[in-house]
Image: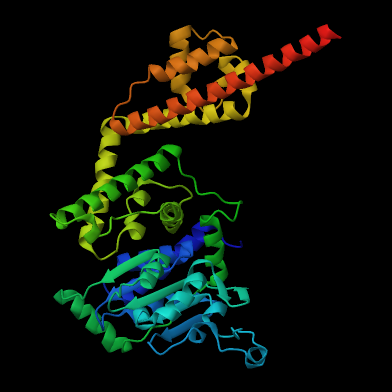
Length: 448
């Protein structure tokens, strides 16, 4: 990569600022769109007609060079070849259904699908694997697609089994409401008088190769760069997500009071979406020119878990974040979680390498148990090195005397205790089998 991460981050920030000046009062959706681009995911824009979805999408894609853009207005009459390219007639004569993908969505890095829910279910179903696996799979044809990010626009949501699967392919969703605030209306009118609703050429464009490289860093495919996230912050993130899921479902139950769950679907965050949210955290960090994740980034995970532009959903996520963070800060929970996670890492090391317990505990604590365990050990045992059995008892005693400051830490402690029990049981079984083998060999030697 010829440019540094910080330099590319500045270029992306400048691009977002430029779009914000062209598309008035849409800064949050623009930031969300750049997160979609950086993570290589798709964005669905919903609004009433005439709000500027097409202008926004075109202006975003217009900030990059070296990428093909596929554009289509969806309709009921369209067939999959609208998106995949026309059928190869010569192949069709032999009974083979193959598409000539030149100029199609398959051969394009960016795609804009306007009024996507006007497409028929047959065509939408055909799009699923292209959007998710980035492959054209039609009959015997199975080819890799270049698709990086698709922005789709719609005036309405159409609910069916196929459209639910399609919505799942759009990791980012935004609802753009008409802006009736007089000053913003004035600024919009000014822009229209200047540019007539058209996109404008930016002063500088970003090579798609740089966006692609940032995507490789964010998704872990470039091992030369790492976005750091402390274990305690990763655990905190999962606590926030769980609490948000709880708040959303409680809100659903309250809004459907008196009805059975058959009348509505529970809000559910899949493990896949939860894992993808880590890419979003790295993207948010890089957008700010950082190589580490902060709580500011975690506070914006509603970009992926909620629909940007729906105040109730965004507010629930912010409430979940603030509630869990306040609990952790007021109870010293972050330090306790860091300690327990370091202890868990040590147990995993012991599980993989039993000889660690043969070492003096003073050396053992150079693994991830950090200062607080070392201090506890010295206070309890005077820093004297112990035998293997005593090392084990010391570890067990440390956990048993560990007093959680809140329920979230208590849950983690229980999980770590269960892991510790399992690891030591495995060691005992191995020792028992080794002793049994030893006795068998001694018995065979006696018989001989």
